[in-house]
Structures are given as C-alpha cells and as structure tokens.
Amino acid sequence: MNRKLETLTVGGGCFWCTEAVFNEVKGVEKVVSGYTGGIAPGRPTYREICSGLTGHAEVVQVTYNAAEIAYQDLLVIFMTTHNPTTLNRQGADAGTQYRSVIYYHNPKQKELAEVVLAEMAPYYTDPIVTELSPIGVFYDAEEEHQRFYQNNKTMGYCTVVIDPKLAKLRQMHADKLKSITA
Image 1: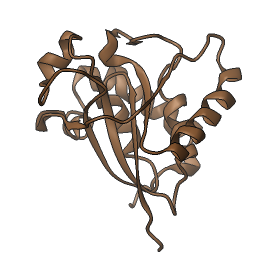
Image 2 (image 1 turned 90 degrees about the horizontal axis):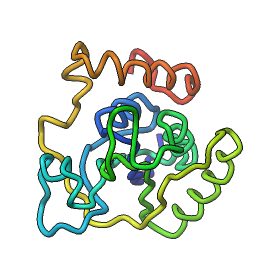
Image 3 (image 1 turned 180 degrees about the vertical axis):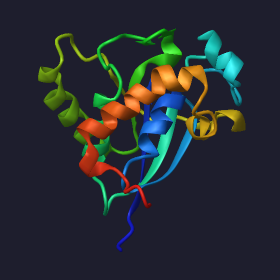
Image 4 (image 1 turned 135 degrees about the vertical axis):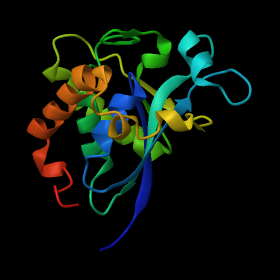
C-alpha cells in the first residue's frame, strides 16, 4: 500500500481521551501525548501544565497515512468526539490546558481546518470555540501518559470518561476504524 505520512496535532481536553480515540482510527500509525502552545521556557512537566500557568495545551500528535485517511476526516472525528463549544473545559477538566485546539503544520492544513470548522458549526447549538493556531514546539508527555487508556482500561477515569467517547467514536465513525484483527 502507498504510504504518505503526515502529522495532525490537536487538543480536545485531557490527552488520554484524545489518544485513545485516534489509536482506533484506520490509517493512524502513531499517537503521542504531549504539550504545545505555551510560553514557558524549556520542557514543561505535567505538573506545570496542570497549573495552567505555562500556556501549554494537552495535545496529541498523530502520525497518519494520508493515503488511507484524509486530514479532514481526522478533524471530523476530533470534532465529534469532544465538545468543541466549551471554552477551556472538557467535562470536569477545566483550564486553558484543556482547550479545544487544532495546531496546523502548514498553510494547507490551516485552510482545510477552517473549512471543517465552518462545516461542523451548524451541528452544534452553541458556537464552536476551537482555537486554530500554528504549531509551536511539541514536547512529548512523560512516559506514564503514553498509551494511558491501553495500560489502564479498568481505572475509574477510563471507564467513566474514555469508554463513552470510544463508544461514540465506534457508533459515528465505524467505517473509519481499524478492524478488530488489525
């Protein structure tokens, strides 16, 4: 199969949820939880990010095969598996580090993201507040945050918050998911 690897970087609240969602999507080769969009010098820590003082957002950086799935399809999945209408909040997680954000890597991604945001707006009662910004320095999160759902499926947060997001993903985007045997 033809491989054309590209990168998507988005934040939709806690990166544990967003990582779990994208790990199920066909064409996604790697998902790394991390931080970007802040002003603090040097590599920020999870504790510093959680303080809300660094300006960073919890994000995932997705490496995907554009020959298998389109950037726009990934954005639609992103927009429908978190709430893009709540400013700096996803469920009980509140603060700028939990903002809804799309970080574009080039002008074409910015243009496509603007189109997807406009197309998605009519599906929501409240206005979409998803930030659209150029990617800055991306920092991998600490190892305990990588593959969090995969490693902690029975943890309370995973069963109460992540499992319903995955159920919604599977219902709304079944045709875009990896097969069970993959």
